[in-house]
Amino acid sequence: MKRVDNFGAGPGALPTAVLEKARDELLSYQNKGISVLEMSHRSEMFDEIHLSAKNRLRRLMNIPEEYEILFLQGGASLQFSMIPMNFLQKGQTAAYVLTGSWSEKALAEAKKLGETRIAASSKEDGYRSIPAMNAIYSESNDAYLHITTNNTIYGTQWHVLPSHLDSPLVADVSSDILSRPLDVQSFSLLYAGAQKNLGPSGLTVVIVKKSWAEQASKTVPTMLSYQTHLQHDSRYNTPPTFAVYLLNLVLEWTEAQGGVPAMMEKSLRKSGYLYRVIDEFPDVYEGHACQEARSRMNVTFRLVNPERTKQFLTVANDYSFIGLSGHRSVGGIRASLYNAVSEESAARLAEFMRDFAQSEK
Image: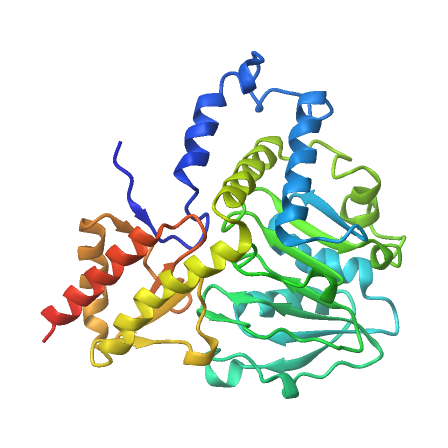
């Protein structure tokens, strides 16, 4: 069966081995005569899947016991509202660092619920960079400081994260979770939509410090309260069971690949293939991000001759490279290199880019 080289930004590529195992178990999970799609979320069989996924993620990310792992719905976008609803108290201010569209959306939701401020921003340079550490300040009255660790639309990424803040640090890690080590203890809450490095769409992973969750507002609607999901082990209502099952398979695959350190090494190599071609042909390709802020997950660039962008994408599609169109808000080209994208795929794309550039001479 032919498989394309999928560079889509999300839902992104899934490991072939995961898809094959899910296919083989679709009708009868572990030969028990029932599909995961059919089993009760409170059954012993699903208990095992649920606990296995939590334990694997805890191992992969070295998550301390004082943190809880939640499997929620609504995507990362729902977290934009849940976080201020739970933690932005009257008399406090929520601080946001703006590095792209998703941090802007997170700020917009918080503004509807309380006082906010922009702690730093790279909007002035077209989101080509990440604010310098000395430009970011937190205040004792901040409910939290929110960052987005990787910016899928603009192709920038935090390579040094804020530390020693006066307020709790919250991060949207949707597009680079498991691609590099994170010091979980530096954060009060991490959240990620699964559809990039964790599994399929429909599942959101939240990692929250228990002591901080205990400080959350008690007047939040039931389904939007972190306490509800903590008290019911993410099963207050029916969770996205098949998505949790696939998450567990992706985590199993990640462990087999060597875990997060191996994923980071691969991401450095994969992104390096593409950035080298962009730098080699500056008269053909123009990268969006400043070199020091380049994302290893989303390589964004344009053709210097904008009229050639459509031709590039058309020929790329003929070579079975898909998902390369830039986000509709900015255009251009974007190659997403999530963990399941193989080094071979990235190398093939780099070779195509080099051949295309040479044909432009």
